Image 1 (cartoon, rainbow, N blue to C red):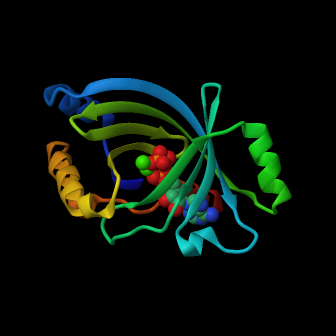
Image 2: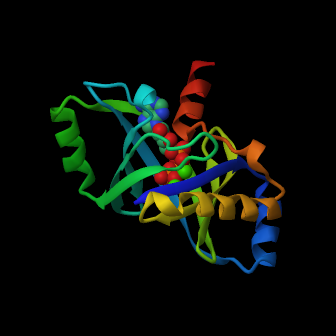
Amino acid sequence: MIEIEVKVKADHSKAHHVLKKIGAVKLGVESQSDVYFAAPYRDFAKTDEALRIRSLNDQAVLTYKGPKLDGISKTREEFETSVDEETTIQILHALGFSEAGVVRKKREVFRAGEITVCLDIVERLGEFLEVEIVADSEKELESSRAKLFELLKQFGAEEKDSIRTSYLEMVLEKNKG
Ligand code: ATP
Ligand code: CA
Ligand code: CA
């Protein structure tokens, strides 16, 4: 799967207003706790990859993300599967992986046509909005990205507002200062 995503800073009370106006459907709300891992053999921050375990409710999901494929969005390959959290952590530790950082957030998820809209309240960082399309192949990439920026206009955001820094990088940066 290819994840085509744009992240912006957003005032959620305004965003809720827009979501209502465009008839977006609320899919749910999740408390997510994401542990990112560092590989012993390469630096994911440099290679722009990610390996994480996300816990939500009593479920855990293991995700690998590949390097970003363009300069303006957060489009990348993504593989995801349900796992047993404890066992997966044991396997990763046994292989030499270590925890790189944790990101906690509350995420409200909406659907507007084929676009998923997430309103994220990230611990220590504040309010963000992400729009996303998941595509089977890279050929839909450009048209999907255009659709995302078109929808973002409704929220008063444009291409220059696109944030390509990950939540993890922002949290790690905060921890430094
Ligand atoms: P999702 O969209 O899958 O729900 P998210 O919105 O919670 O994820 P993002 O900030 O969009 O979080 O993506 C997670 C990011 O963390 C990825 O962009 C990845 O490149 C980054 N990342 C993972 N490991 C590291 C690391 N060791 N150093 C720096 N960045 C990392
Ligand atoms: Ca995403
Ligand atoms: Ca994201």
